[in-house]
Length: 278
Image (cartoon, rainbow, N blue to C red; front, side, top):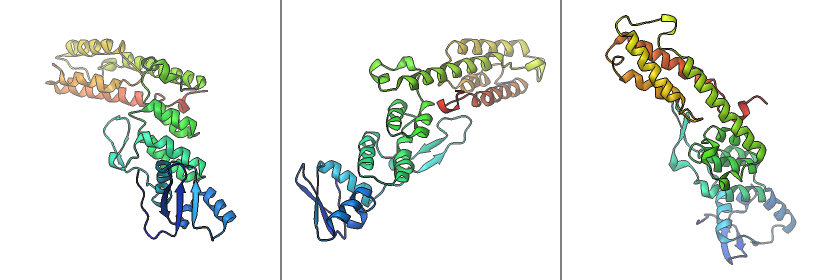
């Protein structure tokens, strides 16, 4: 990681690698630790030695001189897609860099709002693809909102190795299991109780038997496969494109209504651990 500074008026040195960096004193003052150092040393000192590697020091100086902005967000408004906000990858700090940046921000006492509102948002941007890693980092930083948000993307806990779950506190692991069990049971309940022609409403005189059988067959096969991340409504939507539903306006309307009702009910199911009853 390289760092360059224009209009430098001070220097810091990596003692570990004996590498000197030209910096702006005012930029360093965003850190409470540097402010205290300057108060103790006065204005006469021109170089400050720090026991950091050159790479770590460069990362810290970038944070102080060129603070990253939160990721650029793009809303997704189609149906029940998760996540509902997509982050432009070009604006997101890579996940492997974030633990060290959090460590440096804590060590040098960067402003708390920078940690939560900037670094925290970059961490959250990775939650949909690396939920367990994001959870572990967020938990270690006491970023409870981000840890909770990451929980909605976790795969069934049985899919993770022992090595992976060892990083999760036992209380949190229990809550994850509770959350996933609650979700699976609720989705299966809604799926099996949602009829395509409820109480005969909107029934098709020509294809009622075939359409009902098609719907029932699909939901029964899906019910045994439901997992915490299953998009139940999306899976049932396939029926819309099968005969006789696809070619019949009445059956198609009924199927779409049933799918949308299923989608609405599933939205009400807790997605994150903070939504579970204590």
